[in-house]
Image (tube, rainbow, N blue to C red; front, side, top):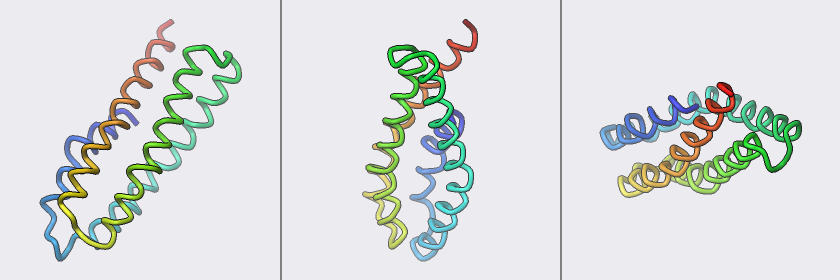
Length: 124
């Protein structure tokens, strides 16, 4: 997810601004459908595996911190990103695309921290 979120943040979301207004709704529907096929199973697996590791290690462990970050990622996704995408499915709004890029930094940073913790735990 780390590589994917950085790609989305730096390349994919900013490219929304360059899609022709007449094609944007169709483009966005394709984007959300295809991205969902990739992202949702991995996010779900990450939630379950992080929860399991937390259950094994305890609620005050580094694995627990990773789990709490995953919960924050889910909250950010469904409270900030999804509503913006729902509106963008109806029409192209450059201001909303800018808001999407700005609020996606929360997920980008959270996934980056989560990945650092995961890498640290793997090398222990």
